[in-house]
Amino acid sequence: MKVLVVDSGGRGHSIAWQFKNDPNVKEVICAPGNAGIATEIRCENARTNEEFLLLAKKEKVDLTFVGPESPLTNGIVDLFNSEKMPIVGPQKRAAILEGSKAYTKLLCREIGVPVAEFEVFDNPDFAKDYIKKIGYPVVVKADGLAAGKGSIVCSNTDEALNAIEQIMIKKEFGEAGNKVVIEKRLFGTEISFFVFTDGENISPMPVAQDYKRAYDNDEGLNTGGMGAYSPHRLEGRELTELVSEKVAMPLIKGFKEKEGIPYKGILYCGLMLVDNVPHLLEANVRLGDPEAEVILPRLITPLSDISYQIINGVLKDNKIEWSQDYYCDVVAAQGRTRQMKNGKSKGWYPGYPARYGKGYPISGLENIDKKNCKIFFAGVNFSETKGLVTDGGRVLHVIGKGKTLQEARTIAYENIQKIKYEGIRYRTDIGKE
Image (cartoon, rainbow, N blue to C red; front, side, top):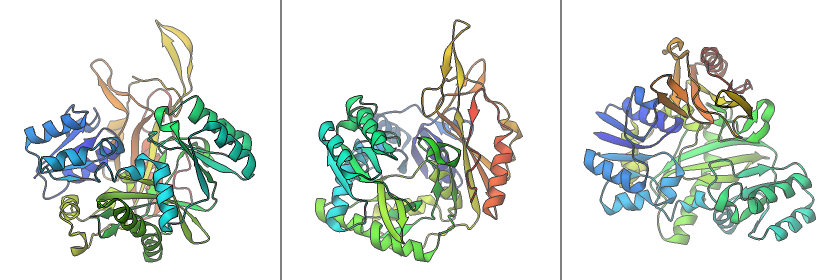
């Protein structure tokens, strides 16, 4: 079997690596991939849905698996289905569960899935009036896709009003900020809960904890994710049944009843547990990043088998097996560096998630403990003169494996210290429970 993975970052590397180790798979192609992934898996430079389809037909791939949300919300599944090319993911209409936060919140309110109190606004003045009136901390969210950074957690009224300025007036997230969801800020235990679904049945994945804020102790701006670990301390039958019954199944069934089409693929529920009630913070239509990097290494059942069960609507016929080993992902990000031009300093790049420099040589990868540690590459490129260089805000994921969380955490941090590039920065509290 030949598999095409559509992705370019650490999540895509973890998916492609899973297929590479799949006994049913002879060849894996990642598109567009990156220079780090290309050190072990073939990468091809396709970037649009039409190019992905042409590549899949040219290579006669048997299965396509989509990592990021953008191709899904732009209709890649509909395109592949029209050509009878097997692909895992929801149709364009179903991808609205991530494409519009307002749609999903309103659907949840309608069908009884627990969510925080919220209102939706497309007028910044009305949004500001609402914030001044309610008198409690809120989260302000851009309605559309914003690369995982469109939610601003606010502690007071001034911060919330500033969030409206950023999103709706300054348009820091572009057209995604034409509309916002303003919801009551919840306090509890935040978890990431994922399921495979064939539109009728679900198969829950292990539970992961991710770390969104840029700095230790959950300080700084939101990011795409600075690390994760799995299993979560609450993982088990009780939590799985609670979330499946209260959130995942009602959302999948409610969507089908409302829209008349099934939701198939992967559903990612970002949750806040408050007094043992799972409140849906966000729904995403794909694997999380960095959660995929700690969940997929635990998968024992071939991902190719699961993929065809989803496509053919027979997910309930087979039990999916998972390892009980712990995995801890520490993200090496691009931190503060000098901004140089013609050999002269022009100030500083503050670093991810703000503006950051690129093109810094990466060294030390040859010293990684390959038995207990895996590197998934995210923002990297190749230079003829410098070799592997940084090319993104999140540069690479360092995954430690162990029989306990502490062991996995220790291995991840021991290995990330071997990696060097200018401005390397990472949180030091991933998995510190």
